[in-house]
Image: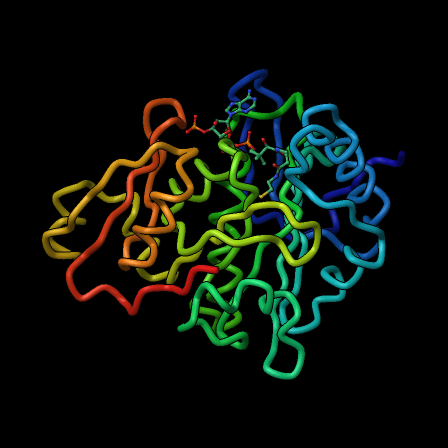
Length: 264
Ligand SMILES: CC(C)(COP(=O)(O)OP(=O)(O)OC[C@H]1O[C@@H](n2cnc3c(N)ncnc32)[C@H](O)[C@@H]1OP(=O)(O)O)[C@@H](O)C(=O)NCCC(=O)NCCS
């Protein structure tokens, strides 16, 4: 596979991997990189971990080209280290006329019209580069990109057992707004959502959040107790963080919270 030459691309951020000190650059990829993108996707899709858990769906080159065209601000964020693609995420911006990327999730987030929503899919980090915060890095650039395209809602879908992915989304300030059955493969999935301007506060300290949100009621729930989570979602709670090594989901209800999401 040929290497990716970043000298012609706009570099959004540079850093070094905590694990081995290798340099990396965060970029928006272009249509000519579709083979490298598909190759990384296939490595992760074909891994024994994914074959067992079905955390990501199989995708063809056409799917990534749709994101790479830049139509409506669609994009693929890539992280390149020494010419190798080590991480990528596809951003889709649905429209009123073509809500497809968001429509499977529209029943969860009733206050997020397609034309204000940015959807992240196909997030993958090369197995030997995990734990370096690369997903967090991509989520940060996703927010910036969504804002630049006047999208104030961010939305993604995660298989319910995908603790690394859930943890990264919750740490970035998204919350679990619904539990559903995937329209594509029948998997049980959570829908993670945030208004970007509120998600930006997630990194601030608890005192700030308490004052910004008012007194919030927090309830811990076993991470695999979907019935309890569905009951709380129906009462207007949302999932906000994973604790106890991913075993416990903390759910929160703030006074004046938006209307409760629907649960199927
Ligand atoms: C999900 C995924 C993208 C996370 O990438 P990452 O860059 O390693 O993520 P981060 O470094 O930001 O860490 C996020 C979580 O990954 C997990 N993690 C950390 N180090 C890890 C490692 N060495 N190996 C595996 N998982 C690790 C942790 O649960 C961490 O959460 P914590 O900080 O609360 O402990 C990556 O594991 C992956 O590609 N998984 C397969 C595809 C997938 O599930 N995609 C998401 C679809 S919604």
